[in-house]
Length: 492
Image 1 (cartoon, rainbow, N blue to C red):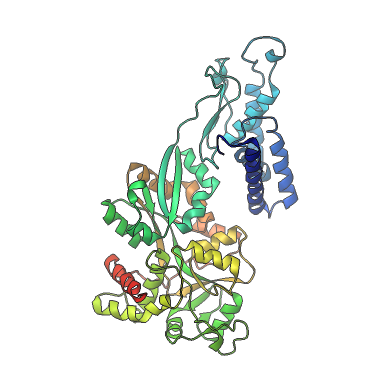
Image 2: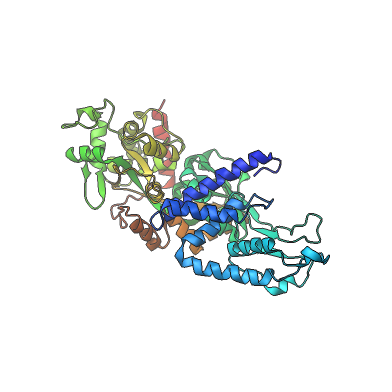
């Protein structure tokens, strides 16, 4: 919260943050507890902080404590932590030694101390209170709005401000593909990074934008959505290191009426997972067939071309992956190599892009349109599988929404390119830290341990194809660039 904000503005921000906390908890624990129970727990925890002047971290602490109370596997541990904290702190006399009321234990301060200790997941050992003029309570791991770990001084210290100094976090800046924004915005991810001493700030951009036009000097790492974009960034920045913490195959988000219609047309095959035959789709699209021309169409009689909506191939990796798949199929199911094959593939697939009209610069836009506007606007959207799974986990899908796998598809390797030592440490953490790998799976990505992904999809009953045997190997970096340049020229 802003330091100079008016009291009313601070209160409004706190209310908004607490509403968001409640909504997140309802989403996360809705299967175990009714919404009323979650709201009651949040309200009860919030009351513990009434009367305290420092408000910036209240929403973070309320969420932490409420999660422990709502999660039965953590409740016993939390209760034990609080009791240990109380036994350590409550019996200490007030430090000013002036007698009377101030010589007795300050119950309110002790309760606050135990709350902070519980949030930190640890208690204050007796040796820390040998100096009766200072008591600092470590609240390590508290992260969220500011994504920082803080040290809270419950009683006055020797410093004029009466607070202990906060341990410094190392700020690391990155530019990331927009489909990863939700992952880095997650307070739990910020928390896990803060546990290692980092505060990560990211800016979203299309992956090809990152590779071609973003000023990388402002960042410590780049995190595009494919190995091809990463290779270009490595060349541009003159670095060799990289990490691939997780991946996501490309897929098509659609609706049941559209899937049924394309099944009648012989393009879609239903089953345990729904598949789209790219070869048959390409033939249909090349002819310029419109939705209202499909035989037996009574559900989507719209006079516009049967096309998958993509992003702009000049800026976005997801569109580049769409080009890689369609060019492969257009080239007789063969990897494109050589000028003749490149020209032929471009001549066949460029209309898949140019006939769409306006296209977004990153994958976040089309998928949000898909979620909010329905099939009238976006009957089929080319997406990362992770976007669909993430939406399913967070209860954003409607009952008639369907995930289709193109046959063939392509695996997008989300690749961290460290631009300095700080970026290298983040890349290593994202790849090896168990909590960050688990959280990546909760956001729909396929981490190194694919069982983490299958646990999430099974728990939320998302039909996914874990094996995906029919995958395209993308063309080499230089070939893909020439294909992209060829499609870009088709817009003129």
